[in-house]
Length: 135
Image (cartoon, rainbow, N blue to C red; front, top):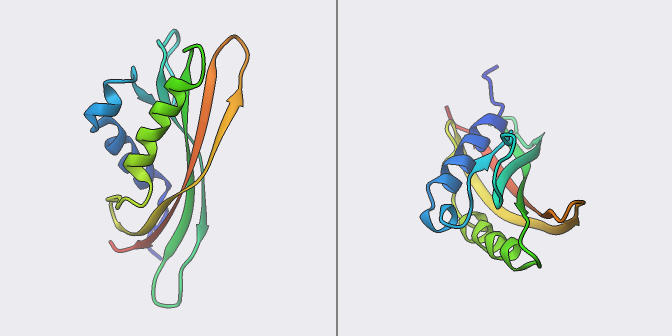
């Protein structure tokens, strides 16, 4: 059986899309899965992902959810929501090139504002991605 795990290829594709967008990168200090100590705000992190098999007898597929997080110390919600709008523009109903996989769809699943201590503001945006293994 081929290695059909899609989590890493999806993370690579998401990171590439985020860091390749000049508008978004003009608003944030970086994109991380492990934030360096003393990283200035605002920034985006690629959070938890889940993958559930969605194959058939003639193909391997997966339904994956990935959560992107926006972190800010801006007083109020404007900066979080503005960056969240960029995430929607980049990923909601947009084709995503995932190495070794065909993307069937990608869509927004949920957005949550999360209260955090120490005046850090947090927005979690979850996307659902269905893929089929092609390699």
